[in-house]
Structure formats: C-alpha cells, structure tokens
Image 1: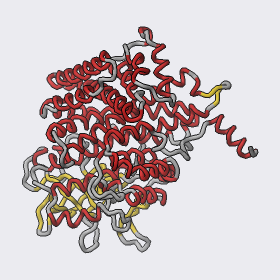
Image 2: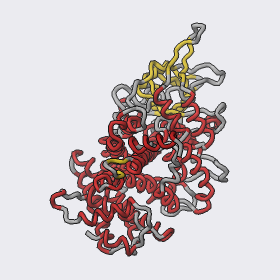
Image 3: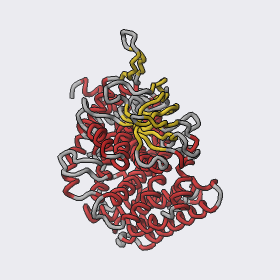
Image 4: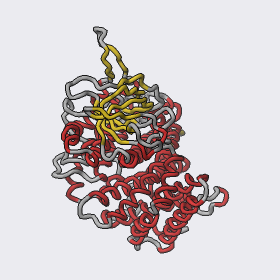
Amino acid sequence: MTETTLQRDLDASAIAPDTRGMNFYRADASLRDLLAIYLPDALRAHLEPHLHRLGELAAGELDECAALADKHPPQLHHRDRFGRDRQWIEYHPAYRRLEAAAYGEFGIHAMSHRPILGWPTALPAVAKHAFTLLFNEAEFGLGCPINVTDSAAHLIRLYGDESIKARFLPRMLSQNMTELWQGAQFMTEKSGGSDVGGITTTAVKSADGWRIHGEKWFCSNADADVATLLARPEGEQSGSRGLGLFVMPRLLADGTANRYRIVRLKDKLGTRSMASGEINLEGALAYPLGHLDAGLKQMAEMINWSRLSNGIKSAALMRRAVHDAWQVYRHRQVFGSRLLDLPLAQRQLLKLSLPSEQALSMGFFTADALDATEVPGRSHANDARAVLRLATPVLKMRATRDARRVTGDAMEIRGGCGYVEDFVNPRLLRDAHLGSIWEGTSSIVGIDAVRRAIGRNGCQGAYQAALLDRLDRCAALPVQFVEELRCALRDAVAFAEAANEEDEMWVRQAVTALYHASSAALLAFEGCETALRRGDARRALWARLVLDHRFHPRGALTRSDRGRERAIAAALLGDAPMSYAAIAPLLAR
C-alpha cells in the first residue's frame, strides 16, 4: 500500500466517503426487485444495460455536473453586445451536459410517446420512472423540465389538432439536441397557484390565432421552446370553467421572438440549476388545445402526470440520501468501531430507509395503475383510472413531505461535513423542500385526494380492492399479520371517508393514514413476490415497521418488542436472504 493510498484510506475512515464511484442501480436491490414485479421479463432484460449505465453516470459524472450547475445558476441577459434587445438565459456547461444525458442519450422525456432505447414501442410508465428515479438521484432541478416536456407533449397528443401535433411533437420528442424543443408549464400567477379560477391572464382571438395578455409569476424552465398555459378567452365566464388551455411557442414560424418577456429569474432556495422566472405576456401568439371552456380539466392531465413524477423524484432524493448515509455508516470509524456495527446507528439507518422504501413502493404502484389505464389489452381500465386518481395525490402529499425529513436527517448523520456544500446533503435538503410546493401544496393535494378523488369521484372502492387483491396473494405470510394489514387499510379508508364528510381539518391526517396502510400492504406483497423470484422475503419486514412506527405508533416506554426490532434491523441491514419461515416470527405482533 502506497503512502498516498494509506492517507486516502485514513481520511475516508475519519470523514467517510460519499457516493462518487458507486452505481445507484446496482446498489439498489429494492428497485431491481420492483422492476421484476412490474415489468415483463423481456423488457426488463432489454433495459438492464441502460439502467446500469444511468446508475453509474448518476453516481459519477452527472453528480459532478449537478454540483457544478447548482453552484453556477443560470443568468438572464436582456441585450446582446450590440445593444439590441434579445433575451437569452446563459447556462453553465455542466447543466448542458445534464440535458444531453437526459434528453439526448436516454430520452426520458420521450419514453411515454415513441419507441426508444431500441425498444419497438413506447415504454410503460414503470420503466420511464425507473430512469426518472436514477437521474434525479444525481440532479433534481432538471427533473422539472424533463417532466414538463413529457407532460406538455402528452397534452398536445390528447388535445391538439393534427396541425398542432405535426408542428410541435416531432421536435418535443427529439433526442437530437440541436432540434429538441423543451416544454414548460406557465400557470401560477401572483395570487398563487391553488386558486386557479382567479387567473387573470386573458386570450383575445386574432386572425392568426389567439393573443395572450397577462403575467405569470412562477415559470419553471422559463426559456422553454414550448409552453402550455391557462388563460381566459375574451367574453368567457369567470371562475375555473371559463379557462382555456393554450400552447405557446417561444419563436414564431418566421424565427422571430413571440411577444412575451422574461422579467427576471427567481432566486430560489433549491433547484438552483434550473431557470424559473416571471413572465409578462404582451400579446403572445398561442393556439388552443381542446375545448376552450375545459382548460382546467384538460390541464389536470398534465398536473397528475407531474404529481406522479414529483413523488418519484422525492423518492429519488430519499434514496440518494440513504445511499450517502450507508457510506458514512459503512466507513466511518468511531471509538474503534464502524458506525454500522452500533445499535443506535442501525436504528437511525432504518428510520431513514423506511420512508424511502415506502415511497418506492407507492411510486411504482401508482405508475403501474397509469400503465393499466393506457396500455392496450389491460383489463379493468375504469378501475385502474380510479386507483390512479387516488394514488397520485396520496403519493405526492406524503412522499414529498417525507423527503424533507429524510434528507435533513441524512445531513445530521454525516455531521458537520454534511452541513458543508462540499457534500451533497445541503443540495438534497434544499431541493426536497420544493416537492411539497410543486403542483399543489400538501393541504391542496390532501383536499384533492379526500374531497375530490374520494368524495366526488368515489375512487376509494377500486383503490382498496386493488390493494386487498395484493394481500390475497400473501398466503405464505402469517394469517394474523395479513389480517392486520387488511384492517389497517379498511380503517384508513373509513377515516378518509369520514374526513370527507366533516370539515377540512383532517384531510392531511387521512391521506397520511391511507399512505401508510397502502404502502404496508404493498411491501408485504412485494416481499412475497420477491421470495418467489429469488427466495428472499425480507421486504415484508418493512411492512411490520410501517404498522408499528408510522400507522399506529406506540410510545417507547410501552414497547415490549425491542428484541424483535433488533432482529428486524439485523435482517434488513444484512445481505443474507430470508425465507418465509425465517421472517414469520418477526412479523407477529
């Protein structure tokens, strides 16, 4: 061993390495197990090399680029060197490299729309969001432009006429970086994003289209080539039913700039790499999508796609934080021992990992429901739409809030170094706080789940049935444990129904209870499926921890099962697979 190598090893044992040089796909057995459950074997095998490559890039080159782009945020310019009025946003080369990977090499934005990565058809949502997860473990800011390009193309595909589709979709779905048109969503105004019916932006009919006037207050991917937005057509009624959905190009057909200006870029807490701005619309040319009096209903398609993406991206932040914590626990030496060998450290690592595992399960359950609504040949499409309608806000509300805590606690694990911008922890924490604001705050999303998805649309029946069906496939687990999971799910649904009938005070608690009961059922089901595939039932142990610590937690002074929890910790933090028989005593209450 050379002196340099010895010094590096001593430094690592004192401070602990970060995740550089890892492979986030290879390191994530849970992700691989869920893809084995939800994807056909042939597709999974075809995508494996691409997922492996992205996992390696995300822990290496892309992570380095993300750190640079975060430290060198975009700059807005209003004039060129000759004094001519010309707006453009200057990005650091590291951000351009991130774009080239996401849009160019992997085509994440196009996966739902056309054949990609050598596969003959568009990819299912489960596959797309596996790539979303891995990419966002490196870079969260660009995750928004990728998603809104994807979801804006979805709106155009659903509601655009043939001329609109022909003009926009080929370039929006291109992987050629010189041809690509990125998308954006311009909806929020100064009054806020939740009271959509109060939008003041207007649309006036003209000979060549519609002219948009007004101001949009929070426009992510501000210099996007294509933006979807809501505006009130001239003469339409007030409120949300009078809004139309429009698509607006940045450049007109003759190459001149459309009539809107970026006033300034936001100085944000997180997602610093990505340009969010304030925009004045000064008669900008735009084209209607669908019926002019159904804009909000149509825009909801984009919002729901974005909420699913948001939940997956929050899961990505948590998984990255857990990867980092594992590195500290494996390599940090204190008082002559590895942190990983200390009981208190083991418990803290479980507390970090549990919300991350829940979000992964709920994210892919929701993505699978989306696939069931769209893939030809899937049965029970109406039930799947109901499942998707409720699962999406449930995932979005809880996973985004959990990400804030997990990233913060992971920072503490690294100690003082975790508070320093040399490491990834501050960026993860800053980025995580946006998740619960994007596409509706926690209260707004909670109301959507309880008052609309449950109260108005009655989605809870199909949702509960889908999860009970999964529990019916858990016959190998102890009967008492499976019945406990069924009861938790029924209690959570009943609580949500009661919250809908009362005032809004309890909607967030109702969604949280539904999330925990649902994720516990899924973790148990996934443990059974993984046991069948590779003889390891340990994933079901996470369901036990969800019930004990998140669904109906008991105080530490009243607990009588500390020995069992030590055994669960040893099982989940170890590498050895465990059979049904081996985990059964650990599932008993």
